[in-house]
Length: 77
Image (cartoon, rainbow, N blue to C red; front, side):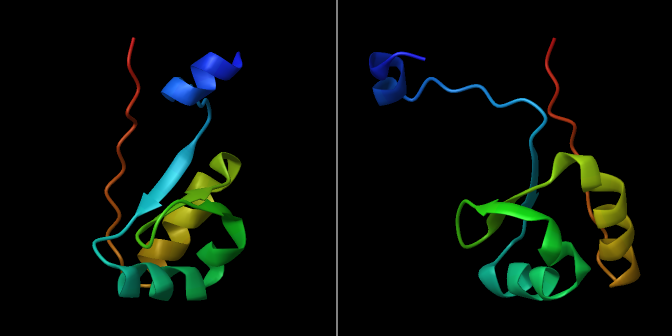
């Protein structure tokens, strides 16, 4: 990607999985459990990037902890 493209924010990420919570406190609770070890990068107080190869174990851990995650594929043709 050229420097000009980076300045305009043209980026495409493949195989990206995010966890987004309603507030920072909820995300802190989620990350205190087993899901925390799969975090790749924190994007904000309420959003983290997680290892896309670990989505199933993350979903199981969230459900076991009492969360009801909504899964959105976000795929476009």
